[in-house]
Amino acid sequence: MAKVLTSRADDYNQWYQDLVTKADLADHSAVRGCMVIKPHGYAIWEKMQQALDKMFKDTGHVNAYFPLFIPKSFLSKEAKHVDGFAQECAVVTHHRLKTIGDTPETRQVVVDEKAKLDEELIVRPTSETIIWNTYRDWIKSHRDLPLLINQWANVVRWEMRTRLFLRTAEFLWQEGHTAHATKQEAIEETERMLDVYAEFAENFMAIPVIKGIKTPNERFAGAEETYCIEAMMQDGKALQAGTSHFLGQNFAKAFEVKFANSENKLEYVWATSWGVSTRLMGALIMSHSDDAGLVIPPKLAPIQVVIVPIFRSEEELKAITDAANKLMTDLRAKNITVKFDNNDKDRPGFKFAQHELKGVPVRLGIGPKDLANGSVEMARRDLMTKEVVPMEGLAQRIADTLDDIQSNMYKKALERREAMTHYVNTWAEFEAALDKGGFVMAHWDGTAETEARIKEQTKATIRCIPLNNKQEDGQCILTGKPSKERVVFARAY
Image 1 (cartoon, helix red, strand yellow):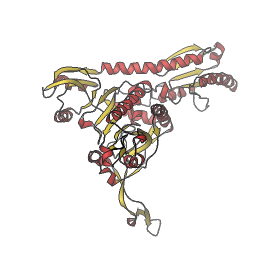
Image 2 (cartoon, rainbow, N blue to C red):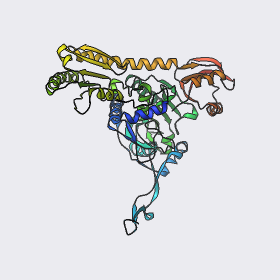
Image 3 (cartoon, rainbow, N blue to C red):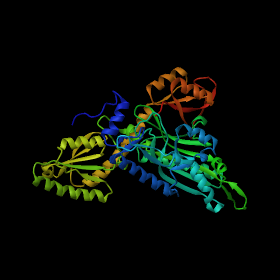
């Protein structure tokens, strides 16, 4: 099979675009900035959903669904919120079309001006406002708290520069919205969900992350504190992989959400919101994949094992099929997903390349000689290695191999991050480290003005202030003013 991907060394951005489309993950759509998620890409997203949904429910959350449309007046109730999203909102102004013209050549579809909405609607960029307007009716007493709700949905943010999965006008995500009786309970919830995201990134996606707090400049619009997990991609750029926001009482006050406490006195509730999106698909691709295609952690692979028969006759295929069926039964008993690729349209070599491109973690090749020898050829996608292994005990061997692939992928990503994390003390060192790529740990004087100047001069942002950060005396790399801790700088997606 001919080479289908641009190499990472030649053009990393083009490699990414090639991989997303050639590996059948997603396609551009007829709507500018929107994407079509293809079955293989959606199957990976479903695995992510299933794992996260279980983690949410294990921490006491339940799912609900809220409207796609938000009355425009709702956004204006929280000033910072509307300021943060005003430039990205898609607005619905009419509810009907009509046709004009008497012939096929002159007929047109136009907006019916008589169907103008009394109040314009916003296609949700996020759901805080519509949800808190609803919570006003749901929350009356301390007995109604905590309210722990999540929804799986789509949102629209009218991005001007788009890239499949990483930044699209419409994307899929989950958004949690919780209400609490006390500030401390809300902060604990915010931190708990950050831990859930970090556990998912590391244990399922095999991506090491830094947990931290955003600077005021980088906070979610309307939040008092934004917590995040930051990941490093192979090219050294950072990617925000999840956020959890402590909203204080801002939305409760904007929408008059009060509860009667145990002394029957009215108080405003305390709020959080938290979310991850299909941007995680971009993180998965850029963290692990190579010039041959996708490399998917086994826990998120739709197909963990593929069996490719190598045969010349129907008789040989029948014997291989019998052996494959027995092996598939053994694998499925261990909750391992497996596919028997027995189509006769493509040669084995083409199939091998296709499954490498799509990132199947383990590939087995079985031919007549393998059956005679009681063995199979097993290939590992993460290492691109092959070995002949005995058929006896194969299901357990594969289970152990999948576990090893999962841990090896995390180890490789962690080693890369550590090698690309630079500690600097001067502006010259800072600029040089940024050009190398990776995380740059540097002192900052804590002011928004300095943060903005650094961003303007280098296009690097403060990704986060790490939780439990080491305290040390230093000087800001730009101003020379005193600093008590290093923060994480990087250029980012």
